[in-house]
Structures are given as C-alpha cells and as structure tokens.
Image 1 (cartoon, rainbow, N blue to C red):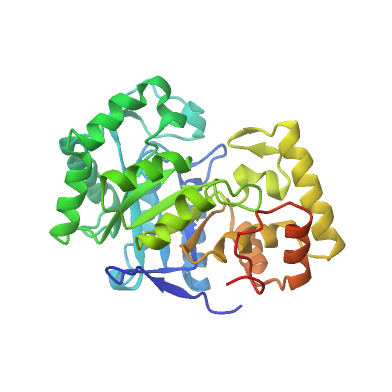
Image 2 (cartoon, helix red, strand yellow):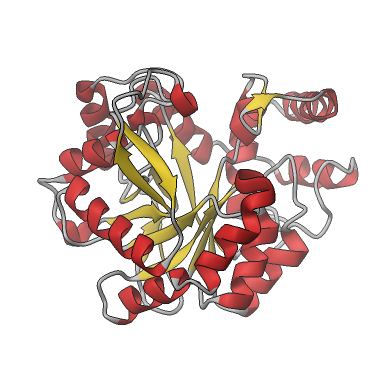
Length: 338
C-alpha cells in the first residue's frame, strides 16, 4: 500500500491526510458496532497511514466521541488531526431508544440545537471531556441549514451569526485553543452564505461535490480557492448509491439518480474500473479539496476504499465522462485537468 499523502491548510499549516476516517459508524449508524470493532478499525486505519479523524457529539448520541477518544488515547497527539462538531448540546434522556435518528445503540443523551456563543463554548468543553483530550484541531458547525432545520433555519442562523456562535469559534481559534473552524453540512448554499459571515478555514461538504453532482463547483469551490478555504469531501458515494446500496441522501434513491448511476457504472465497466474507485478519486482532483473523509463499518470496507484510492484510472475514462455529459466539463479530473 502506498503512503497516504498529507496536505496543509494554507493559513495555519494544520495537516490532514488525503483520506480521513469518518467516525459516524463508531456511533453505530444503522448497525451496531462493538467497542472492540471500533478500536480495531481505528488501529487498522492508523497502521494504514490515516492521520485525520472526524467525529461529532451527534454520532451515536456521544458514543462516537467516547470511542474515538479511547482509541486514540495512547497515540502521539502531535501526529494526527482531530475534528468534531458543534451546534448540538447533548442532554441526558432516559427515553432514548435504539433506532433514534438512525443510531443502532445510542447512549441516553438527546440532542438540542444551540448555535449561540454559550452553546458553542459548552459543546466544545463537553467534547473535550468525552474525547478525554484537551486538544481538538477543528470545530465544524454541524448541520446548519434548511436541509436540517426547514422553516426554523432563520432562527438558528440568527444564533450563529448574531447570537455569537461564529464569534465563539473565532475566539477559540484566536486563542489557539483550536487550529481551524468551519462548517460540516450537506448543502453547499449555506456554506457559501457562511463565508460571507465568518472567516472559515474548512468546509466539510457531504455529498455535494461528487461524481454524481457538481452543482457546488462554480458557486462554492471556486470561491474557496480565492479565499484560501479548503474543502473536506464527505459522502463521496452519495450515501452509498455509487457503491450499490441504493441509498441517496440517506433515503431510497429516486429513479433519475438510479438511471445516472447506471450510466456511470456502465461507462466504468467499459474501462474495467470499479465505479467506487472513480467516485473516490474524482473530488480529490479539485485543488480546493484537501481530504476525503470515508466512513467504514469494518476493516474490510476500509481496505476496499484504500484500494480504490490506488486503482489506476485511465485518462480516457475521465475524458469519456466529460464527453458523455456525466460530469461538469469544468470539473478538474486526475491526469486531464489541473
């Protein structure tokens, strides 16, 4: 296996590996994961060269943060980057049940949205305690936007912008308590709005710059390049539809998405390249994308993903994707566009 490359943020030098481990699965997303499996997965990721780990209080209702902290506890803290998220405070609730919000084994804490100055500070301190470590490198504002909040978005946006949420993040960064701030969201529009309100370092954009869709390319990624903001690509398989599970945006894929995935799969098969390899490598070709965060249920799944990262993709396949109108002609692709 080749060494996994590292990349530095342009402003502060924080480095992350090209591939990061997304740790929602450690919180038991849809299916339970034992503590032993969680530790083994992080250990294997470390041995494979992954040095960026992303978690959140919401994952497993605090379970993921606890497991990530435990799994990394004996590692040299200077050798890896760690991100978690703010925007939800976790409060004790003995009515929590298996399956709530998709978590197979949630701990008895219920999320409450809070993007205010005090809420951000409290969330940060709570995460430090759950992780068992004082140093967190990146804080992402989690799930701000219409996709999550619907008609309540303006209320929470007000908390973040006028209620001091962004100010809290800036103070933490200015005091060197953290290295970078950003958004962790599933919609590019709110990320573009946030860049007008705050001096962001990173945007963890899930599912919106992928082989399947590139609508964010010109409005967001171009602006990121101009402003030295970097993208961490999440959800590169669009909830799994690009690797055969039929899910898109956490629900059953609509027919138009299924048809496009079929066309993508047929073209990749023509060149004898796995669709998963093309889907993983595509977003990393854009200069704004500094890392790709991959969630994995098992060591075997992570092994497959890293093998896809190294799978040769002929330039002719990238060209064919453009010619057949399956990707935006202005999207950078490996070996063809810079």
